[in-house]
Amino acid sequence: MPDIIRLLSDSLANQIAAGEVIQRPASVVKELMENAVDAGGHKIQVIVKDAGRSLVQVIDDGGGMSGTDARMAFERHATSKICKTEDLFAIRTMGFRGEALASIAAVAEVSLKTRLSADELGTEILIAGSKVQAQEVISCPAGSNFMVQNLFFNIPARRKFLKSNTTEFKHIINEFQRVVMAHPDKEFLLIHNETEVYQLPVESLKQRIVRMFGRHYNQELIDIHSESSLIKISGYIGIPEAAKKSAGEQYFFINQRYMKHPYFHRAIQKAYDKLLPAEEVPVYFLWFETDPSCIDVNIHPTKTEIKFEDEQAIWQIIHAAVKQSLGKFNIVPSIDFDVEKSFEMPYVGKNTVIRPPVSTANPLYNPFDEEKTMGAGREYKDKNLQQWQLIYSGLENKSINDDIPHLFNNSENGALKIDQIESKRSFLQIKNKYILLPVKSGIMIIDQHRAHQRILYEKIYHDLNDQHFVSQKNLFPERIELAADDFLLISEVLPVVNSVGFEIDSLGGNSLVVNAYPAFLEHADTREVVYRILEDMKQHPDLYVNKLKEQLAMVMADSYAIPYGKPLGESEILMLVDGLFACSNHNYAPSGKAIMHILELQDIEKILK
Image: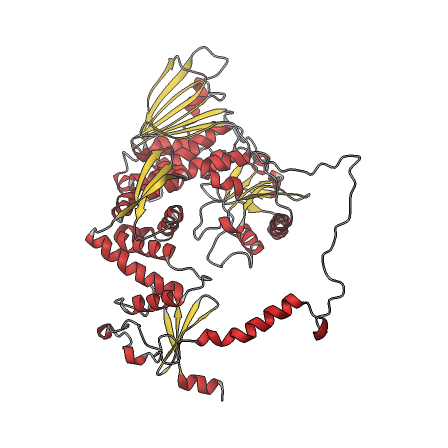
């Protein structure tokens, strides 16, 4: 039998390695940005075209490379970060395995221009599919300039499975954010298709967060600090009101390296116990510092999963630090000196006479002494006792069903008939959440929020299909600032959102302006609708592709439905019940949850037996 084991060629081995390291254009951005940081760059520019398909260019003003180093950098396992085994346990740089550039060069056309600051001339290298096309001496600025073009040009299957430009650029933004958040002491620039997306100067951690994710975080973050012999923790956590239903603004950094750590995430989630609903996720931006010998960053090709030596102890430290910061927020709100705030302290001079407060209470008043009670109170009480009968005046001969419109007559859809309701005025609102209505078989319990949600959903969805909306102009246009990835998401559905009566335009710079809203949504909180649409898109991306109108109708209906805790008047309850039973489906909300339940008379008798 002939020998069947053979060595792979360097080109094929690099392509296999690229399958682990370079999964999409965002992977190229990540690796090149990390190399720029390791090279000591203070100003790093990222230029992208067609979401990285055509071009990913990263320019830095770091140390640069000599001609020999520039050539060696594209070899597998070639690195300047480690020399011996012990170096693996003292890693403080971003890239160190020497696979990224070799993997990129195996699946793309790469151009590198680089120069050492001490040299007069630099080097240019052209590589395509792991093959060096040219190398020559050129004149160029100090630092490095990587141009990666036609990614996966020699692997059509991989290129075919790339997502849409919007999706791929969203991944690029995510990788960009992770690097720039770890290094607020550096300048960064991101340009996509000749449009500036981010221009970030050197700034503080909080300023970087606010610039990346929106000004509203200026008032929604609590600082956190904890230092022990095991680990040092600093950064910010969000107030409970800033929590979201989908993961997004949750960041861990260890020694200025972004990481994912579900175990530590649970420590933070646990600290918010009883402050947040189970489905909501708190916002946090936490930086850890520890001895590099206590962690292992080499357990995953993308180096985003980190193994700690004593994870249980660190879990307890994180949990305690978050609980402490939340406690301080509840008792003593922190003062943000980045925002202009002022408060007045009363001035007391040397000659000011301080007098004790004077009480106006009557010390002789005795509530149990009927003869000596205060006259005004007695007179008011007697007057009310004499007039209480007037409450029912005029109702002696009035039928309980007078002037009530005929409701619930849509029997074709299974709605209750009018004669099934024993008395439409005999209802009760419980905890400003449920409506109790007597029926012949027992008591009907209606969820007021879900009932209104079903009514609004059917109206909005019907109007979406008929394109029949009237807009109400805002007296003052409302501006909404978003993170770049959120701006991309909402831009996909803006035409449909505007088709239902909104008038939302892009201002550039990841900002929107709301000029009008649907007239039937009076006192509309458009900002809340935009945020809800974003949250829903993150949770159900596939549904927004296939059932865009249904999802938009659900989000808008839920946003404007009567909230829990709102007391309703008699006419409001009658209109709500009337509208619910006129719906095609009055039993279930658009989310699939039950709107009503009938507590049978026999069940009530069993309970009280």
